[in-house]
Image 1: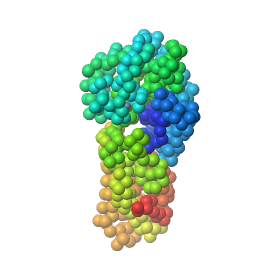
Image 2: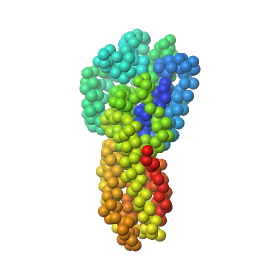
Image 3: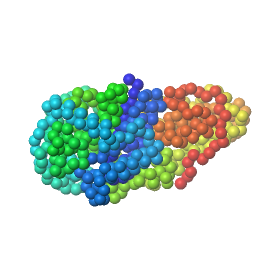
Image 4: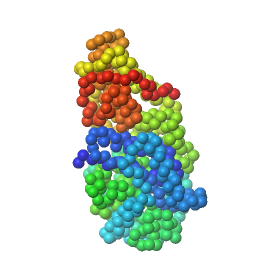
Length: 483
Ligand SMILES: [Zn+2]
């Protein structure tokens, strides 16, 4: 079917949004816009994860209720995404009523199937992860993600029979090579599954934690925050109703590598148990680092994406994140390379291309259609986007900008007049139009400004080859100021 359903990780609201959160949401927004521009019925879901011990603790420190803290911080995430021109179809909060209802329904369904049973749990618990860790996961006795020693906990609990699904999950991964991307992550996960799966505790005793969804099987328990959070992908599209039937299965869940295991192993098992189809792809991107260290509030190096956007411009940030940070790998953030890319690429290469083409075009009353001399290889870009190779796709699009600049330098249109000049300019304007269509998912505001300068309606990817009969362009404006 001609639809595209994309989700991101939902962010935990014990802290404020930083550039690492923004990175993932920008990527998701680009993929949603790209598919939308192709005419696909697209649904993009993001939101905030609001239950659990960690949030309850931070609220207590701040002398407010967990809900008050969640309201306050969730709004900051929502506003940050609005500011960065990230446009989800729904911003879900795990405290939303419909989400709570769906979690309880799914939990009951799985319980009735016999996949939830009671026992007690003893293990090493990391508050940061809201999860029990195995000895193997620890680095020097500490959680590798939070750099803290886990606590030894023992409590009554309900368990999800994850172990039952081991073979089915392995089989699914083997039969669906795009189920887990990239390949390196897939191999890591397969190896870990082969070491054996343990059943998973999905509750906390009310005496230890009440900030969560009441466990529908036993009122002495609260639902484990991870179990609750994963189900947002269903409640976000109104499971089990019409919207769900239209968009499920998800085309891609985007998430960082600290969430890989939950999405590539636990989530599929939950879906199998509930007799729901699996998502097509779980895409695990790398971490954004700052001076080669993971960016996080606990490490004190978080960068506020809104401040950054105010300083450099939203499209500069969006462009930089895709171009600089390879989606398949870790990448490093530095303001120095951001400045360089804005100056050399956005201001010089793109800005100058448009400025000189429009300035020359103003010498003629209009630029009529003629044969186009700059060729575009779009199929390759489409393929890269379908494979989630956003950096490579943007590199290819940028080559179109560079090729057009090269063409202008060769033709020297400033020496030409009349029909000769018109012919060269038509090729350039068509090239700018196509580039602008291709760039729209990445830098929408700039792209829309370019359409306006070309004095034509905004176009989408399906209209790429619909050549304009005659251009009557506007006066050039500066698109990107040099820093
Ligand atoms: Zn941890």
